[in-house]
Image 1 (cartoon, rainbow, N blue to C red):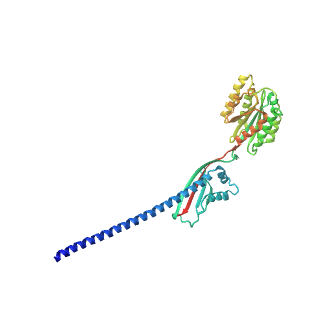
Image 2: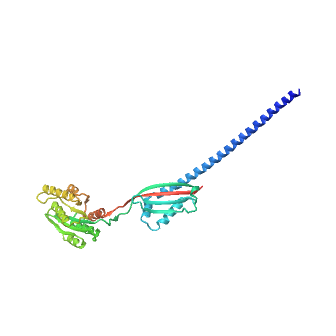
Image 3: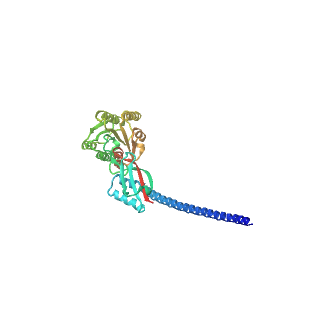
Amino acid sequence: MVTPTMWTSSCGGDRMVTRRGQMRIIEALIACVLMFLCLSVSIFFSNVYKVTEATELEEAGLNVISTLDDPEVIEKVILKQDGWDSQLKSLIENLLPPDTFYNLTIYSSVTGQELANLSNIVDQVNQTNSETSSFRQVVTISLPITRNQTRKVDVMLVMDRSGSMGQKEPGDQYNKMYYAKEAAKTFVDQLNMSKDMVGLVSFATEATLDMHLTNSSSDVKAAIDDLHPNGWTNIGDAINLTIQEFQSNGRSDSIWVMILLSDGKANRPYNETYAREYALLQAEAARELGIRSYTIGLGANTSDFDEDLLRQIASEGYYYAPSAEDLTEIYLMIAQDLLFEVNYDIVTIQLILMRAR
């Protein structure tokens, strides 16, 4: 009896031991699960914090890039205008949180030249333990027009002095010849006589070479002042004389330019039909020699001159002056097109931002 009792007791004890062990195992599992959950929550919040920081950094960087994507701002940097560096630094630092480090580089994608570099990153910054974001923006910018310092030009002024140039346009104080002379002399003043040359051909019933290509602006102006209106309109011979002058005295390393002004229809030599075809043939010959041709039609009534002919003669541009008073502005426009240039650059903005974790 004793033995069975002891067995029963032993069996019951074993079952009690087994239940206690199971409870401890369950408790350990629960503890592990709780530890895992706590660790997961910690990692989750840590990641959320990091993502939030990166987003803030990105927003700040995009704000800076957007502000710098302004041709006026970049132009100040390229031209090194007074105070550009301090203004740019102030602009950046006002847009960024105070605990943000930055490195800004602006360079030309055309030449590869570094245009600006600003940074507040110091050697003590621990880059391996910092949140970092990079941004890049490309800006195309046109710079103010400047005189092309390498370009040399040989210019022949080809001016109509036919009888109709002695007439006034409605509303003008003086006759057309007066305004044409003033405009042509203004154009001469735009040239750099240390390297440019200018000559004069005029035409009426016949064309004349009034001044060879020269670097004396005073001589050319005197020849212009000596023009007097009389006769018919011989455009073809005027272009032919211009070609001959370029072939004789034009420089091989310069740009050859003809600026032709007329207020009438080609009607000499011979008749209007022949004169027109002859003028077109001479214009084609000029084009084949590489002469750049500008033409100006003068007169309130466009039926008084052959606008279509002047358009065909022009290789660079045709200009219309309804009033003789418009001529000076037109000659200045041609000078700007010929002598000056607008510089373009493609600028890359690179920005690196850093924040300590």
